[in-house]
Amino acid sequence: MSAQPNSNFSTEIDKAVGLYQSGELTRAANLCQRVLKIQPKHSGALHLLGVIQHTAGDYAQAVDLIEQAVVLNPHVDSSWCNLGLAHNALGQNEPAIDCYQRALSLNPRSAAANLNLGIALSAAGGLRDAIPFYDRAIQLKPELPQAHYNLGNAFWALGQYFEAEYSYRRALSLNPDFPEACLNLGITLADLEQFSAAIVFYRRALQLKPGWAEAHFKLGQALQAMEQLSGAANSFQHAIKLDEAMMHRDRALSPGLGAPEFLSNKGVALTAAGQVDQAIACFDRAIALQPGLQPPKYNKACALLLSGKLAEGWPLYENRPAVRNAAPQEYGCPLWEGQAIKGKRILLVKEQGLGDQIQFLRYVPMLAALGAEVDVLLDPSLLRLASTVPGIARVLDTPPNYSGYDYWSFLMSVPHRLGTQLDSIPDNVPYLAAEPDAVSAWGKDIGGFAQGRRRVGLAWSGSHAHINNRNRSIPLQALAPLAQVEGLALVILQQDAIPEALAHVFRDTEVLLAGEQCKDFAGTAAAIMNLDLVISVDSAVAHLAGALGRPVWTLLPCNRDWRWLLARDDSPWYPSMRLYRQREYGQWDDVIACAARDLSAKS
Image 1 (cartoon, rainbow, N blue to C red):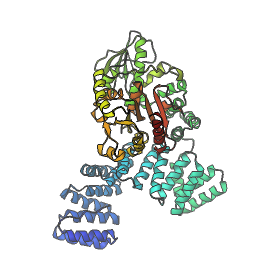
Image 2 (cartoon, one colour):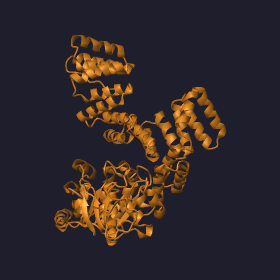
Image 3 (cartoon, helix red, strand yellow):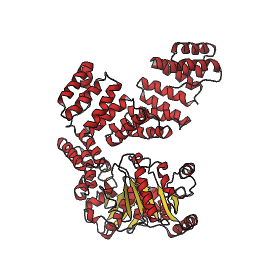
Image 4 (cartoon, one colour):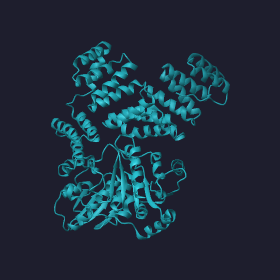
């Protein structure tokens, strides 16, 4: 908790803050109370006294005092933050969330308020909602180990063990003496069956916190998995002596390898690590235990698709959340399941991100060739661009309010219904086109900027709403080596690029900010048509360049998306695309260095 002095009685309050910071709580409280006898509505004294009561463990009194302070002076973000902490201590998550949101409305750059809001959201069950606030806290204050630790906890609870491992390691790199991070990293590694590595961190946790029953018990489990039975028995005995009740609680809270949810989460982590066969075995065991549970089927589909087994993967891919939650007559007509569609009207519906919509628009010409009249419901930013797809009848951005269709289908269900296999992926590219006038206008701007140099477009981050965005996105500073390649004209396709940040990273290299001038993807397409190469993370920009048939290098994170398959440096979806793969989670330097070398060789 932090304390804010008030202008009146500033000397007394400053002295009280000093006493509080030195641990003299009673003297600090007495000084605050003397101020309040003279000025009962002194917000600074009320706030500090509330902070003192919180530190002393009287959380209800802390809430009462700090609430009085914020009523008198509602414009101090740290007061709202401290009120949130007091509510948190009482287990009052919703009031705490409100307080942190008020703090952020006053100071969006408060790392503490972002971190605490994330913690409160996690405690209220909003794990996915919490992640952006942990990310923001880390962005504002990268050296904050608690933010990395709590982010790891959220990822672990969501079954994203690969990401959790990285976050715990970041926390420990900032604070090696962080026992909770050691324990949780060990648990995560054990979930990934890396028992030897887990044992190292369990033992480190016990060095830092010797009487920790939970750590002894977890160490025993890992030793047992390694068939070191004597050591395991010894660890279990320690756990029993320290806290037998905790051991039983841990056993209840940590499901064994028979729990289908645990097996499914473990399979997801193994898929992300490229261990597809082991992942599929986990999914199969989960499905056998609970055949009606759909997430393991969907996760198995992703693993099969990743390994190129499209024929096996597509049927299971129909267990994805959007399909599960949709009503069969959602749009006033039956769901299309592969029936003959000659002379029929069909509505194709978006369900996932912008890149997915761009990728699967390729199926519109195939359906039109079968005799269907094809309408598509897409994101508004794709309306103008999608109208250029051959065979498309209408592009909608809101659901139709009438029943005029024979069938409807999600866009991403079409490859299943058409029996797409690896060697029959429709790659008739380009299937999108830019407006000629816009291409010409961008040609003048980019040509004048490039002055004969090779024109390279850059995009380093995708939509913040994407669940994998923090993994697929690249810190801007990591791209600095690209500016050192001779003979390049760098065109920024990122729409939210910050000029000051670009100037700092690229130093004396002038860049052209194109992304901020593009109002939708039709504008971005026109700019891309004037480029020699696009370098992008796995985002809509990469899909757009590929669908336009333009050369594109796509930079992929370790936790693989199924559409890019395993280990390939090309893509059957986009003939003009080359893939650059991250080898170590969170580390982009080698990827960028490889791209820079290839750029230098071609310049």
